[in-house]
Image 1 (cartoon, rainbow, N blue to C red):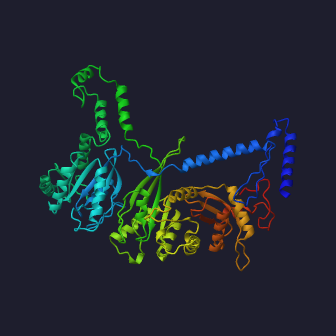
Image 2 (cartoon, rainbow, N blue to C red; image 1 turned 45 degrees about the vertical axis):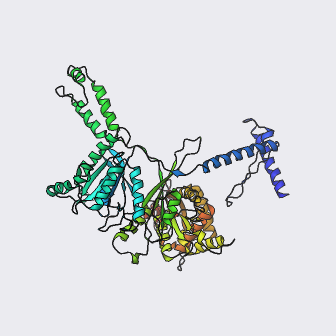
Length: 631
C-alpha cells in the first residue's frame, strides 16, 4: 500500500508540474514518466516508470535493454588472439653456442646496457627468447635474443627446450646473426651450427657472422679471418662490450635484407634516400647525381631538370619518413610470484603455445619475457584494439637467500616489471597456501600503487573440494593478505585452463579502477558521512583532529588529498577506516589501491583568519571589512 500511495504522490507532482509549464512546453498525457531514485547510500539506482500506456513503454524498455545486452555480448565475445607482428618492424635473430656474448650484443644494439638482458660469465643464463626494440639509421626493428644452441641434449640443461625457442626465433626473423667467440677461435659447435644455417636457412633469409670479443683493431681482423671457413660470407669483427664493428654489421645486414626481400620494400633506405636528396639540394651541375641518367643530367645542366620546389618537397618527404608512427596503447600485465607456482605455465596457457620454458625445477625462468595479445575492437565501432603485454618474471625468493649474481639481477628484473606494469597478477599456490614471501610481494604491489588481481593457481590439485571450499578459500586469502584486501581473486588451473579466460575481464576491470576519477562533490559527500559516523581521533589533552574537505588529484592509482588541521593526529586505523568507507560507498575501486595524502593548513591560511584592523589588544580577531580575505 505504501508503494501505491508513493506512486500516486509522484503522479500528482508530475500533473502539477505539467500544468504550470504548459505554456512553455507541450505535455502529453500518454507519456508521463516519473523517476523515483533510492537514497544515495544504495549502490544501485532503480527507476520507477509510471505510464498510462504501460505496455508500450515496457516493450520499448525491453527492446533497449536487449539491444544493450546484445552490444555487451558482442563486445565480450570478441576473441582474444595473438598480436599480429608489424611487418614494418622486421626481426633480427641472434644465435650462437653458449657463452659467446649474444646477450651482450643484444644490449649493445638495443641500447639497453642497463636493465637489458642478463649477462654473466657463465653459460645457460638465457633460456627463453626475449625481444628488444632497436633503431639504427632511422630504421626501427626488433632484436631477438636466444639461448645457447646445443645439438646434443646431454651437453646442457634444457638443451632441447632452448633449441626449440631458438628455432621459433629463426622462423620469425628477417635476418640472422651468428655470434662466435674470437678469443676461443673456431670450435666444432660453431661449425655444426654454421653448417645448419648454411644448408637450411641461407636460401631464404640472410645470415652474417659476428666475431665477438675483438676489441683490438690490430688483432681483431686476424682473429675474424679464421671464420671465413664457415662459408657464411665475410665475418665481422665486433665487440659487444665496446661497440666496435656493430655499425658495419648492421649496415651489411640491412643491405642483405633488401637483396633477399625478407622485409617490406624500402626498409633500410631512409638514410640513403635522405643523403641523395641533400645532394640534389646542392644543385651542382658538374657532377652526376646518384640514380640519375645521362639525359636527366643533361637537362638539369641547362636548367630543365627538377625545380627547386620539387626538390624541397622531396627533402621534406624524406625527413617525414623518420617521424615516429603513432602506436596503440599497451596494457602491461606483470605475472609475479614465488618460484615454481606456475607463472610460466599460466603465460603459455594465455598465449596458446610454449612461449616460456616450463619445468618442475624452481628458477627455470631467468629473464623477463614479454608476450603480446590483442582483443579486436567491437564490431561497428571506431575504437582501437586492446593490446595486452603479459610480462612473465622470475620467481622471487626471500632477500636473505638471494646472493649477488645472476639471481640478484633476475629478482631486480622482476621487481622492475612491477613498477612498469599497469596490472599485477600475483600468482599463489593453492596447494601450499599463503607464505611470508607472498605477503612481502603483496605489500610491494600495494606500495608501488599497482592494480592487482590474485590468481590462485593449481586449483585442480586441491583435494577433497566441496561446495564450501571456494568460500573458505576466499575468506582465508582475505585474512592472510590484508595488504591487498581489495584485490579480486580468481581460482585457476594453468594445466587444465580452468577459469584462465576470466583473467582478461579481471584485468579490464582493474584498469578501469586504476584510472577512475570521482568528482570532488561526491568525494566530500562520502567524507562527510564517514566523519559523522566515526569522528576523527583526538589526543588526551583535548585537541581534536578536524577534516575539512578532500579532492582527487591524480589517477594510476587514484590519489585523494585530505585537508585537515593536523595530519599527525590521523592515525593508521582511521586511514584504514576512511579507505573502507570510500570503497563501500563508491563503485569501481575493487582492484586498485587508493593513495591517501593528509595535508595540514598552511601558516598563510591560519593568518588569514586574523584581522589587521581590529581593536587594539584583541589579537586581530575581528572581520576585515569590506575585504575579509585580504592579507
